[in-house]
Image 1: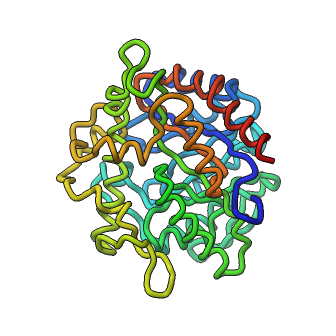
Image 2: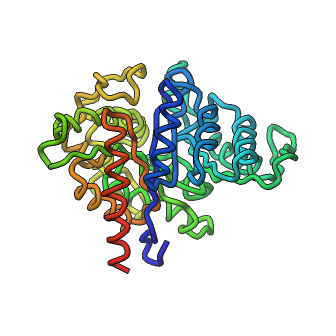
Length: 366
């Protein structure tokens, strides 16, 4: 990170659902590495999809360099000591190539009629997982625990957040911050909130890795695509993402209100920007059986304009332009969701067209 907050380089990650067959997920991860991606992430929702950590071990075995982790796990359905032991085991087997994305809990929790954890519980989970999976002794439920067989293990913990208090937590204790949408205005507001929080507790804000995650769908032209993959088709394939984000935003609106146009409170701190909250006005309900799936029938409230803001959709040049904009805001990694019908084509386009163009633009501007 430079002094101005601009990321020195932009890594690329890919986010995969662990739909069967699991070997297809492993194969996509392997190809992502060949196309220059640095991270492979998976959903973690144990009833909706297959068990991610079993698949993570096979991804790590089939690759050489990529870092692997969940986007995101939670401390409600998974005991934090078990999660830490899992990461430490993977690190011992494959080197320190894991990362733990974590949040309060969404689909994995709600499908079982559970509740997301509190922010205090999330804070404890972050420090406990990082400590145990980092060879340290931690205090847990009145006992001092450690993993004596994993002294050299290291797993950074990245916090997924949208609302002001969760953003502050990411800045205060997270090794990284995950924002699951790519709207530049919201990205700028969120990064500012995370950095302010880091500074308040005496951290160097540059210590917090910034990751933006959103669907990416590459078409040949702005209004047409190959094999019937038009821009309209791409929008429909990515509309599910607005529904997923809407779940979190609706909760934020219920807690904080609809926000304002500035995104700052009277003291210059973060309020809720209307750019984030306005789009859920037409949201009615949501079926988690369709969570994260193209063709989700509970996303009619998600407009094409919202998809243009939240996702990267269009010809390669449009993707390059948005990625450079995100990089200039201080984003260290863009992780693209591959929950649509053009997985292979998108990976190839990013590897052969988008990533080289972003790298070349970075070299030209230095």
